[in-house]
Image (cartoon, rainbow, N blue to C red; front, top):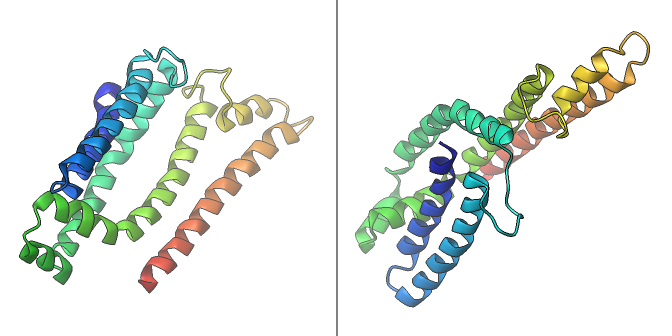
Length: 198
C-alpha cells in the first residue's frame, strides 16, 4: 500500500511539468527526467527500503503508522478539494484559460490549484495538529513508532508512572504537544485571514 501512496507525488509532478511545458519539449523532458530520477530514488528508499546510500529509509512500523494516518485523513481531504474545485471551475479565469485553448491539465494545475491554495494551506496546518494528536495517542497506547524512536505519546506514557513523585517527566512533553497543536491552530487562523485578503 505504501508503494502505491509514494508513487502519487512522482505522478503528480510529471503531469504538472507536462501540462506547463507542453509546448517546450526540451524543458519538459529535463524537468520530467529530474523528477523521475530523484523521485524514483526517494521512492525506492521509502517504499521498499532499497536505497543503496541509506539516506531514504523508513522502518516498517513507521511505514504502517504513515499509511494508516494517510488513510484516515484522505476522505476528508478529497471532499475539501472537490468542493473547492467545483466552486472555482465556474470562475472567469477558468473560462479565459479555456478560451485561450489550454488543456484540462493546465487549467487544473495552473489556474484552479493556485487559487485553492489558501483554504488548502489552512486545512493542512489544522490536519498536522490533528495528526500530531493522533500519533501522540497511538504512542501513548504503545501502538505508534518503535520504542527507541522519539515520540511524545510514549514519553508521556513513560512519565505517567512517576506523576505522584516527579510530575515533570510527563508534564513537559504534554505541554510541548499542546503548544505545537495550539501554535498550528493559530498559524492556520493567521493564514486564513491572509487568504481572505486576496
